[in-house]
Structures are given as C-alpha cells and as structure tokens.
Image 1: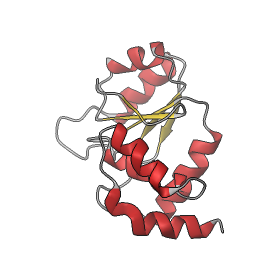
Image 2 (image 1 turned 45 degrees about the vertical axis):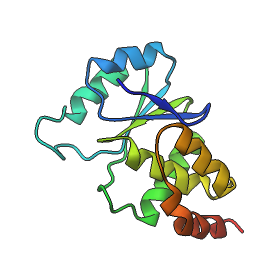
Image 3 (image 1 turned 90 degrees about the vertical axis):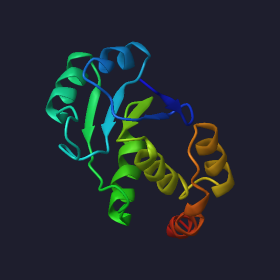
Image 4 (image 1 turned 90 degrees about the horizontal axis):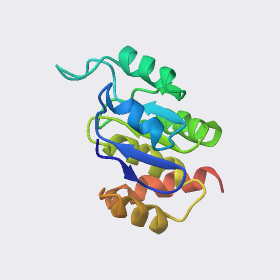
Length: 143
C-alpha cells in the first residue's frame, strides 16, 4: 500500500486491495473514497468488495468514479462537497493516485493559493503544475 499524505485532511493512493483496508482503518483513516470506475482494468478488485471491507472496518465509503484524463467541473463540484463533509482524514484512491490528486487540487483551488496546492501535491509525489489554468478557473468560481 502506497499512501501519500497531501495534508492533514487527505491522503491518496494507487489501487488498494481488499486486504489493505483494515490497515488503512488502523492508520486512522475515517473515509475511503474510490475515484476509479469499477472494472476499469482487468484484475482490478471489485468495488463492492472494497466497500464491504471499508464498512467492516468502520470507515465511511464514497464511490465517486471519474474517467481517467477526463475530469469535468461536475466531478470537481462533487469532490469539493464530499471533502468538506467527509469525516477526516480521507483516503482516496484510483489507479495511480493522480486522479484523486487532481480532484483534490481543483477543488482546493477554490479556497487555497495555487502555489500551496502545487507544493503539497509535489511533496506527495505528484506534479500538477500543468493544472494552473484549471486551478485559476476554479479560484474564480469563489470570487
């Protein structure tokens, strides 16, 4: 399991296995978010199995699938609402963790300076510098 903390409220990870969920709960994560569509790739664990493991371990479960490379403003809106309302800390996962990081970055751009977001993502191992124009658009939504 490759958990990458972005800040005190959220961490992201590449695809989790059912057996990873108990450890994630033990590490203190309260909400598990799946940003990967079910059956996106052959051999991927079924989301129903991951959901069951999350619930068995006392975690809130959020299934919010987003198509890789096609994150829409509506996806950002849903992520923004979820991250504000979720019990924290949140652990979000997808194939590589990038989709989750992009969703977090775009939603965070509504309330945080873009440079701070880029730095947090970089510290977690994700280069999101190319998102600057979209982060500026998101920042304008709240001004």
